[in-house]
Image (cartoon, rainbow, N blue to C red; front, side):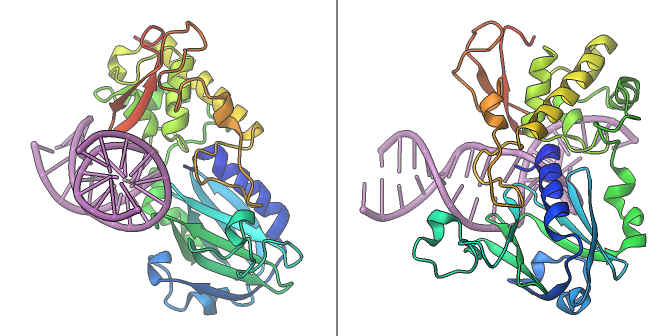
Length: 289
DNA sequence: CACTTGACCTGTCCGC
DNA sequence: TGCGGACAGGTCAAGT
């Protein structure tokens, strides 16, 4: 499930792989892949050169020379994978296609072909993800970007900023508040559980019942797990891969996420799985009260 | 208004 | 072996 670290890793790869490349053709399986975009997406993309790749929250922004930007949201199972013609994974029909991760595959929804013959595939098993083509100067007018909270890894986003924002959600659970993109950007289920364990806060606690000191600790734990995950290439539970098709390893370092029935790294009590804010939630019943 | 739940999807896993 | 159902979770619309 791509969250901030996974999306950041994809962006870093795309910066290296596609900036400066010009689109030769585009194809997609269904117009549902491009909600709220011009009808003739292919026509708008033809001849456009990739100028830069940015990230805001969990959204990838590919700025084009045409003053349009391609927005991409990977949601849960989306992938953006670049393949060069010299790569053995290039093109379908390979005898060991699924084994080597050949592309396109049956989850491929959009294909961008560049002038040098390389391709960028947007794959999405569950079809929750989307791409959107929009004039670059209209990005700030989109409701999501107007509402979204600050980036946790920005220097300007201090613990004070975080505490002030989360305390606007006094009546809800601290986990629901962390997952709310308008409070703080980029946090999903994995890093919510991991940071709450780090701060010894039970996810179902109401925000009003958490001390300022604990909220400040929560922010520093959040920054810690996000930065650690970026260092480890992100979390691959099932489907996540980076722009080169490679998996991340954070999940090996996770303390509670997907570790139910395993010992808590702090006190050895069995990690339990429950449901908080409508999500599978992992906690240590002793460390997190 | 503040907050919670359901819908969107499909692959995988579990019990029978 | 096959089948029904639960589950996975980011975001927004709908419901309480």
